[in-house]
Amino acid sequence: KKIKVLQNPLQDKTTNLYNPNSNYVVYAGRISKSKGVEELLRTWESLNINNLNIKIIGDGELKNTLEKNYKRENIEFLGVLDNQESAEYIKNSIAVVTSTKMYEGQSKLITEAFSYGVPAIFPDYGSMKSLIPFGYKLSFNQFDYVDLSKKIKMLTDPDLLIEQSNIVFKYIVDHFDSDRISNKF
Image 1 (tube, rainbow, N blue to C red):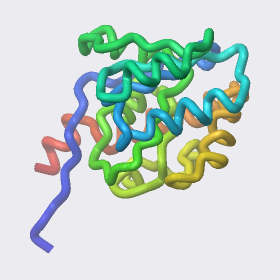
Image 2 (cartoon, helix red, strand yellow; image 1 turned 60 degrees about the horizontal axis):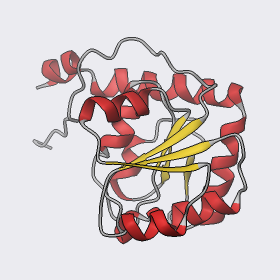
Image 3 (cartoon, rainbow, N blue to C red; image 1 turned 180 degrees about the vertical axis):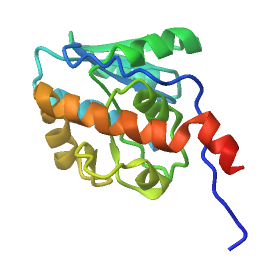
Image 4 (tube, one colour; image 1 turned 135 degrees about the vertical axis):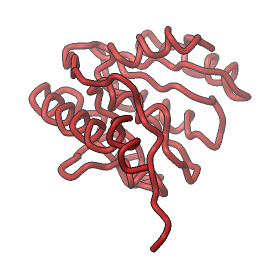
């Protein structure tokens, strides 16, 4: 009863500038087996999406192998970028996506995307559940790559994306606003 959980605050996130007409999705993070990047790319490839690209930001033990195995026009490996460059890609994407196999805490990728009003496709698993606002439709069942493919296909519905953008942005403002968290503290 004496313990309070306070989220990591975000600064200066007061305007939702989301653009549902972007032509790419972002994965940013470690490129490793535990992050499920290979399963994500296998799922992506199986969908034969022609008008949407995925940009992979990061490095890791699987990067070179995945770059060789997934040479496609709609899959781009950007390597390690600084925080500013990564933020620009995230801010201007149609969505971010992760298919982590790990029990995650507060995902920086998802929290940052939500702070820009950018929807995220992510597993409904572990602490990630705490990031799911009421009415959110883009989380998928952990390890269910058929469900992941269904969520990726939903990225073709601009009305749904705008609705989800508004939900996640409001959620961030309500739960991660630095002034609100400071007042609770």
